[in-house]
Length: 430
Image 1 (cartoon, one colour):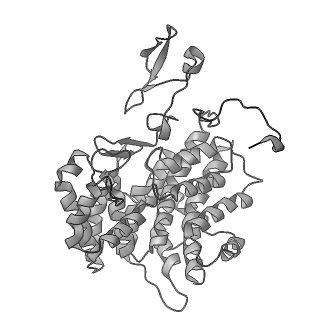
Image 2 (cartoon, one colour):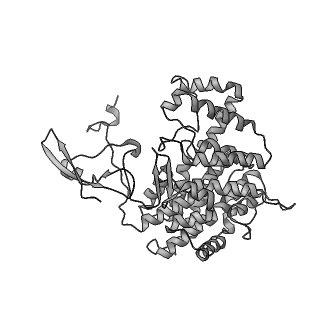
Image 3 (tube, rainbow, N blue to C red):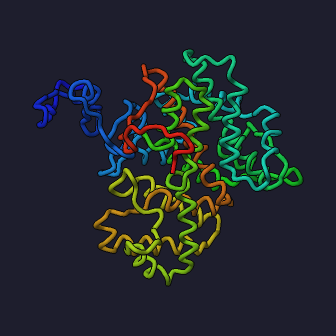
């Protein structure tokens, strides 16, 4: 908090109050409005919390105007090029990049917790075969609270870290099990001799009837996608995890709530919407027509995968993943018409004055769905993939919140309903 204060005046009453200015290490100055209700009798109105900071965090920094994303101070470009998802997970959890010995110990801890209780497979088998994988994920992850509740002490830092590591380790196992139930395939246990993304791909696609060799290209691409999706500041699902966590709830219940928030098409389901849009356009020749439709306010068609709530510049993750998209398709020998369609859509949109003026640049969702499709991951699993990666961010944010004195989240409202009314007996109502 800085020494600067801002004077707020109420002209109607003539009252004034000084509000302190809170400054982080980077980012915009923020008014501390806690004293506003008692000082002037006002609350603030901010639908969508677009101008409200609900917490102080040291984990992720975003400058949407400049297209900057950093984890614990490290630019996402450097981490994407040089790091691995497991190393990035350690960074987000602990605040520093690990030494070799610490990374090996962390990797071993994650491997130790990859198995899930056998009854969870029974639980999964109880879902209807065509249940959406995200519905299964939310239910199964929430049920982990039943397995790790009685002995869990939220005030014990060691138990909190154990819960975080468990969640990171078990999420891929649960995700793969949900997919295999959906497909009617036998469950596959985690092979801890494999690396994180290799292990997940093996659980997803291997069959007991034949040898399965994990593609190095697929594992590397998936690792990159997981790094890019690991955390993204106080988005809807992360804010949900923090809000539920502020009640002292079991961490598995907090993450299950985050999964439910992520499921929304405006959040984690955006890359599904991109593929649906490309399928609707159908052919490169129709791109100009759909570009014009996107600019027409009266047309229900929307250009998915362009623009971002935070970034008013090019999404830095999109720059990274665009190059990876070409590499994956090339190395896997796939000539995907959707990729050609996407590139033409991107080219025209970036040259069109309408999109330039509104700064509607391609975001990470524009490309990620194409990569998932190339890796053989079905559309119904796209948001599940997002959840595996974002679990690292959720538990990191939850750990940080637990280490800081936190009030239970309780937003205010502007009441716009009826004023006081008199109760009427049933026979007197019209």
